[in-house]
Amino acid sequence: MKELDLTTLRSAVAGSAVAVRSITRLQPAGGPGDKVFPPTYMKEKGAETKYALERRRIEGRESLTVLLDSVASQANRMEEALLEAWRRKEIDFPLVEVDFSGETGLEDIGQITALQTPHRIADALLRDSLLDGQLFRFSDPGRAFTDSRPNHATGMYRYCPTALIFGVWDSTGPKGGLGAKFQRCMVSEIIGVDVVGGVKTASRLDPLGIEKKAGPVFQHPDPKERWTLDESVAMKEGKGKPVPVGGSGDKGSPSAINHGNIPPTIDSEAGGVTMSHALQTAVFSLAGLRRLRFVTDIKGAVLPAASRDEAELAARTALAALGLAGLAYLRQSDFDLRSRSLLVPEAPSSYELLGRDGQPATQFALTTGGAAKLLAEAASAAQKLGLGWDRGPITLKPAPKLAALVRKSRELTQAGSGSESD
Image (tube, rainbow, N blue to C red):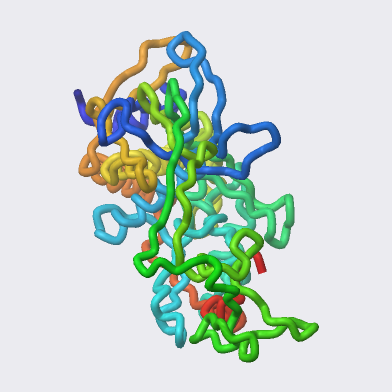
């Protein structure tokens, strides 16, 4: 199968295709019939499991399916795959990061990029960081992305092109709900087909045979000690009573401090599933890319009317190449979704260009090497027309208040009083 080249991709982005599609059949690494564990969610009223189950029409028939990896999760995995390829210097594109390596006590955090934050370049982590001593929002890159919109996308394209592929909404910025909002052009999802629910068993035998009656166990006021059996030295509540360890289910029990036996249990709400197969369906909307307009070049000069169409096509093609690189590198990182959810493809990957008016799809191959080459060529072509990318990364420093907030949170966690339930 022929590898996708720049000429074909450029033609597709110009209008010969509506989207790129890739459908991959998967099986558990343990083989057909082996159990896999989907992600769990809060159980809704009337639901039998903690899984996202729904009936869908698959290959002309109705099937019970389960969500194995959501659209948001797949986007995160693609961004992580792109970041790793960028770190290995296999591909190049703009990146904004916050560097904690110079912050006392926070050096282990290292760098966090816009590819890792929940809201991408619009995330609070970047908002509360500094570029050359000023808050990111008030820097030139910050203003550029803040003022971006689909019909004037140069600022976002210049500093965070991945946001134009995976979507972003700057809803907490200075413009509130009217902030920069770009639709997701890349959508990928993995589901299990023809699923049957299972059960999960759990138990623990304590080699010391510590009995539940050996308690009650109380919280110790010294975080290093954690617990005590002595009521006189235990942490006291407002009325002077000793505070037991644990919550409502194991309050004061040795099991709350990981001692003692746990009786065997059976979990039917999150006990895994078996399935006939899994499906990854990835769709990259080229129609969505065509909605993006670029009025100015990256220096802010208005693009000449005579060359604007060509420049816009070059920029959209560069974005298309970047999105396809995300798909290719995602495939290379394998389908290890979570513990006991490793999937393997039934066949080599394939991609299709979906034409207009019911035209037959055009198949092509795409390796990571081919995707990297395609991206370099497309980015170079766009640069020649005034829409090149800033090479980076743009490195921010956490504002002192942000660093202080992280330190305080860590201190609370280490002291055992920083859990969400508290």
